[in-house]
Length: 403
Picture (cartoon, rainbow, N blue to C red):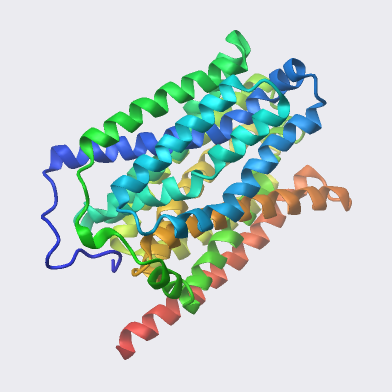
């Protein structure tokens, strides 16, 4: 790996036990931020009824949040580059607490929209700073695994945080969910303040230097791989619940179980992706993208057999999660002089890929294709990502040889 190697004047790495505690806190940061994003989907019916707004209107809360994350996230990151990373993370968590507190107290739909947009401003940058802190405090041989540990917070948010937040909203009202997120974020803020030591002076970056580093062609290539890979995945995954019901014949409760199985696969995938990032990042990325294309293509057939569909859902979960640390590692390697900014922009690229895949799947259905056809459409897009990764790997190898 070539990412963010500490300079000769950097302090020694912290002891293993303390490093593990800090990584746990950074994972908790990602978990609470991810929960705040994903929980809104489950709260929409409750919000629609309580605020007396049509469901499509309340659904715009999800859209606006994603747009702010995608567009404003990198801008916020550039604005905070002069801050040392620990201080930046504390500022972001403070704003995050304020945003969720405002959501819990919102007296109107407009106030709730404003609160959600305020919260969304912290999303990409908070993720970027947690990843960069984790990488900076971890020996080079284990940095891929450190990225995997931190990004596991996203998976925990989807399989644990969002369902628990939805249950709280159903049982005690949607405001209770935001109160709970506010309280948890405040605890994380205190833990970060206590555990994360001030970084070395050189960790405060110069915005102009990070922006220039982002203009390299290799950075654009990695970001393109992220967008296309996520688009291939979400062309199918966006509609996986109705696909499992209508094509595979599963009941609603069985689909819930299968989505939990997807989450279990994601946990295993994080471990796999972290190890591949440490040992063979480009080869691992190519193998996983090839596997994603193959598994999605096979889903066209396996979706018709229940047990085979269940195995396929597990496999997709493993591959999808394993890709995250590998893609993030390649982004950091492409711009080692701009670790914070490239991580934030890669988070926007992930969101852009999700939106593109969802849109592509929806367009495919409106043009006459069926749910049964979506996996092979996603497979074609994933195959394009694999070709991009192959080209990027060859360019990287050629550059290494010539230097």
